[in-house]
Image 1 (cartoon, each protein chain N blue to C red):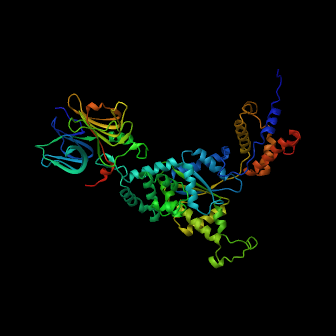
Image 2: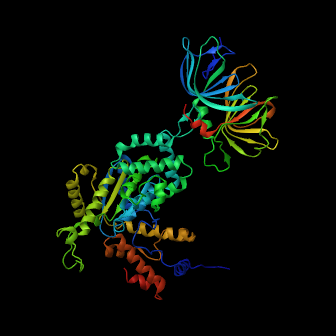
Length: 209
Length: 406
């Protein structure tokens, strides 16, 4: 049996389950939501528990698709679990990510106070503000792409209207559907493969549950 | 076609044009000394370096009479230990705002970048880099200040000052809107009350406890070791002594109104200053070198330290006695000076044509200088200045001039 990499804590597709309590920088994917947390507990009896995780996604309110970022405690039992995977980002990758971050004092970055949707690839409720923000530097983008998640320090929309992410952590599946984590200082993504881009609101991150 | 070149005359002409190679006979902390130490002093320098490198907290006295080259030792140390922060102060100039002055000197020596990096490191140690939800750096300034205070307050006597310093460091690193003003505070600028209150600070660094706390934090958290060189240390002792009646300035104001009849204001100032110097010893890793003019002053200092706190005698090292130049030192010292001088004016022919001679002087003149100055470096330089000025300015022939000094 092939041993799964240490960073994979849970993978429903490959049936990987690493029992224990983990602390660090953890990204989980649950349907169309991304969950950030500094802890996760995986136990045969209690299931999967995340305390004070930040859930990011979209919800339909009336006729609109509204982005949200909420802090919440989460618990699932192992039998019927909507979670697709949970990965623990290695500390050296996090250090690279930290070092690549722009200082808050950099004058030309847009730091949104509330969480907002920049782009949603949806035929009915689609959102596309890429043209409006062309050339601007937006802080704290989270993006769901076809095969994975991009967490970046900043995103700039280039002259073609495609997002260019800087200082990114990428979690995704390769051609064998194995989970991988990588760090890229810069990555250009065609907007056709993007599911959504959410800009995290700096003030909403400060809100306590 | 050039058949013959009078190299000696050329050198004299050059000297007449450039002026004397010997100009300065008093070393100061402000003007750099480029010439190294005399050969006989190299061992003393090595023993000082050995003490500095093997110990963290000490007070090391260097004893030497007037003009023996105590201040020159500071420059020699600075050149040799270039990987240390070595800061010079003279008690002749600094009595008031003592900590503030030393702090400013340290900042000047280290540079603002080091201060910024120390502030960054401290903030990170206090939890400013904590990642919310495992990813996002969202420092809670108040929380960081609380952690910092809990960590630091035990090491600092003055709680108000450490709070001011923590507030300044955290605001500098975590509050971009206050960074520039706090940096002015770091640099010791005068900050008005309105700005201080906006920064949530009580005092600027002119307040002695604030400057002491900042100095302690700076020295203890710097990656580079620090040495404080206090010149003219006997000043503090001479201030304590009562003035003789003939030396006493005529005063209309009777100082006994304020200081009682037995104490002069100078004595009170000197006692305060000594207390401040002793307090410097509580800064971990601050090596202190003091210079004294005689062994009697050393004995007095020892006695004073014993009166203040007998534990201080443990940090007071055995003094290093600086003697005058021995006869062999002078030719080397003379040659080094000339080589440095001609090297500086790009006259490299000197190294080729005069490497084996003492031209324009000669061995007898150097012996005369050593004998007449009794080997005192300052007196030696004064005599060299006199002779070179005569060579440059007088119309007399070189031989006639040298004859007077043989």
